[in-house]
Length: 80
Length: 415
Image 1: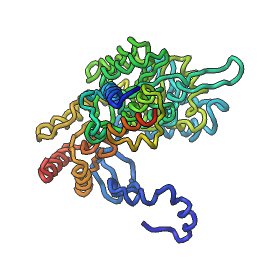
Image 2 (image 1 turned 45 degrees about the vertical axis):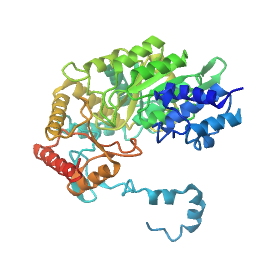
Image 3 (image 1 turned 180 degrees about the vertical axis):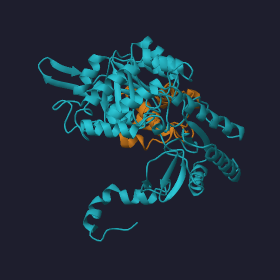
Image 4 (image 1 turned 30 degrees about the vertical axis):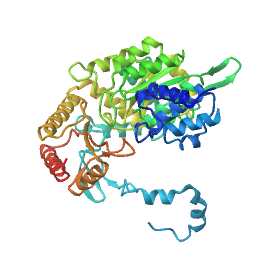
């Protein structure tokens, strides 16, 4: 059973690998664009790796709605 | 904005596309219809009835002073016609194309070159040729949809356009601008035996030269193919006495493929990809953009070859220009205006605030200068910059006037 904490940690690792932003900074309330300065190009790369890591598909129009780290964690938790 | 009285039905049908709203809302560019230029563009430009000192021209060498380009163009037109009037495959290429392609191959140090109507088509054609699958008949096929591309984030739109649809995040990755360790990390992760790395030599927004030697080292280490878009460097860098001789030598001796443009230093229009003969031969059939559209007009191809040879045989033309650009950079520093660190001829002046940069552009035009501004979304928010091309034909007076004006604006905006 994968907990939300596991998902957050996995997501943080992916964000660090793709963008260089430290995993410790990737916390639920942070906005990808405004707080973590992650642009749309990096978001695509992050999304692909999240899909592979957690074995799910995130349609393009849903990606745009995932504004915060928490949004992404909740999405993964709800769609695995 | 006026609407044609008879247009009502078609305007309704286009409504879902939102074009009218987009144009109305586009306050970044107050002139969304392009200005109209009269007469040849040079160190000055005659635009909407006014003459402006021109820092926007990508063709900056004032070549007519050194080589009779217009005469060559006319000779080429008389001897070879105005248009190829047919496709490379069906009818053939014209003699000037053959000569131009051999000339480009020689000057880039590659086995063969193939020309395209524009550099944009060259880039799209390259990506397409490297990534497509085609089956012409039993035993006559290629299967390259498994190619992985790793590109600098800041590569030209034309590369990104070619990569569209190939699957960003799987078949396409981007490394942070000029960041070789990020490139290395991605190449380590990707581990494909069919990887193509694409980077530019001189980048158009910040004027920096990419870390070419280190990029090619990583390509060697990972068995990746390299393509260097040398649009802004071709026939400018190379000789030992100029900056970036090391990078130019690496492009020449080690890059697998090079893209060159004929619309920059060469001052005409067109592009080419140079590389191994077997691949370029295959590109004739696989690029699409050499086959399914017009080619460089014969007189342009003829004049381009003459111009390339003139630049090669008269190094003083580019040497003098580079000294002129370096002088303007020094003068900008002397008046306390920082420029993005680079030794290239492009002057990139960080301004920061998007609104301030756009305001400066308007003021410049009012005061008689055409200065390109890169603002959001072309660059990240509030990282706006001025990007100037010094022109070989600018006078001392014009440059001094520009510097005084720039200083005044910076003071006015509190920069």
